[in-house]
Figure 1 (cartoon, rainbow, N blue to C red):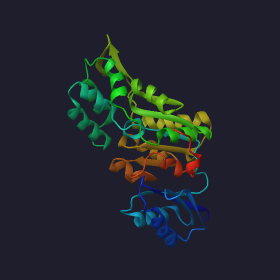
Figure 2: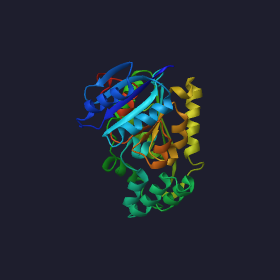
Figure 3: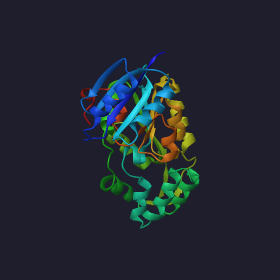
Figure 4: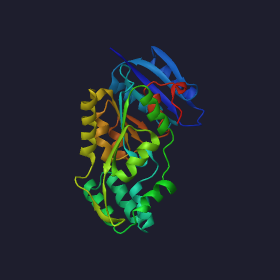
Amino acid sequence: MPDCVLTLIARPGEPALPALAERFADEFAPTAVAWLSPGEAFDLYVPGDLGDLRLRATALAAGAPADIAVQPAAGRRKRLFIADMDSTMIGQECIDELADFAGLKAKVADITERAMRGELDFPSALRERVGLLAGLPEETIGRVIVERITLTPGGRELVGTMRANGARTILVSGGFTAFTDRIAGMIGFDESHGNRLEIAAGRLTGRVAEPILGREAKLAALEDALARFGLVAEEALATGDGANDLLMVQRAGLGVAYHAKPALAAAADMRVDHGDLTALLFAQGYRRDEFATG
């Protein structure tokens, strides 16, 4: 039976990983071990059934300040990376920050949260939120990017390292092209996709152009990329944080829930609850000294 690889990734600054790695080594009797970064990320190559190993590893790591990935050892370095933007590659929800300038952040953020948990139909929730922004000056978009948006730690290293090793990288968002185009450039993505806000006379009209890019369109973007680049799903890595990302995360060879809502976290191959985006590089077997500088 082919080996699986089990990767332990410590929460930044957390000193407990060596003891946790020793506990895992005792439990799983690996055929080989390797530190990807001393005290930070650790690989164990383990024979066995993938599903069973995931269950056992999750139970053993319960309560520990570390993230784990269990996957087939073959093909772990991916050739396509497709990622959500809001609360994944950046720390904010752009529409919530726009709403703050209209004095409506609490109302819009509540709708956003419910949509990301999968409690609301995404297209309807997006139309409702955008409608509340009617009349907001177009220049507010630039202010949000400059004054409010922070890039998620490790994002530039993740995208830069994968691109340096031949992977294609795509930012795909239920947010807006006015943000995705600029933020994709800031992080280093090859391309980006999003919804388009309608603007007239320098102000938001309160409408979003149809069709709306939601969970099905994110899956379609992944399928399109696989076809364009001659890849199969097992060669793709996808990540996001909400229900809108569920289909693409389930389809990818390695689907990662990044500090995610429960519905996505339960469905993903890997959860990142403690680390930053460099956890997705360690999961692919990259050593810290192979990371591109962010």
